[in-house]
Length: 348
Image (cartoon, rainbow, N blue to C red; front, side, top):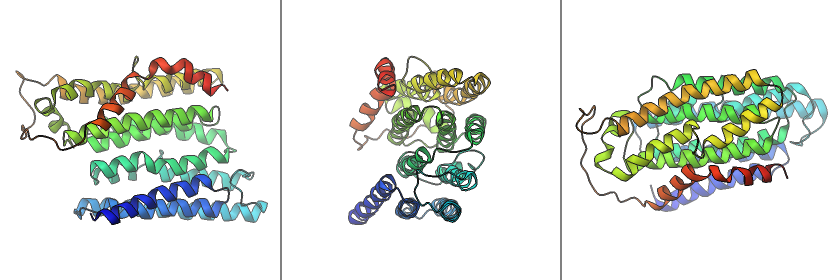
């Protein structure tokens, strides 16, 4: 892609998100979301592969549906209450509709079906943008609207953690596994949103760091399925020995960074007398942990002298910069000791 066009599209992505961040009026927020969608579409379809075009079309249709729902709900809210302000959503019907529209935008269960399909059709770089940056603007709105229906958030959260765990169990494609991982993590964030918005932001930030690491590792190995991952030890042995730790961090095992948000969320849910919900969320994390362990097994325990399940690829020197991978790996593996400092900041 022409660097000028790429720069324009990335600028459009940044501008769309910034407009949504800065807006207090629903029309302006909607406009920011639309700019975001329109800027990423050429990036998704850039390699003209039929799967990429199909994924782009699916993405466009779901985002357009969510945006239309959002516009309809905000207009309904203005009609019922005379308010266009994002923070003054008082009527339950438009608030619930907006919450569902934003759930469709980010891919929460039960309106998640588009996310694995779309991510599977994209290359890893665009997939990374879709999994991280594209979640920011809708989350900024979700944090502002203070949903009037607490049960809705808990149902969306529990459904997403369960679907994210179950859906990834029988997958062999890494991008689909990362999509289900994304759904599960979003479920954890929505679960705690009404009790501790700052904890939701912390979870979102750690999810970004861990997903960034996972995508960059797969990109460095040029891996898109489990079989390719099994031969990666020959290409980058040091990275192969660290990748299982990244995956286990995504699964939320101590003493890795991913354990911190899960631990704090379960603690907060227990404080709110929601022990059954906390138990269900913790059990669903075990489902996710299974497919992360499966990837770890494929990477590290299928080495020589065992038979390889995939064909070994050429060991060509990688032209990619390894600094981003190194930085994100350190953040993914070693931030747990900062938990006391982070909890102190959250309680300020």
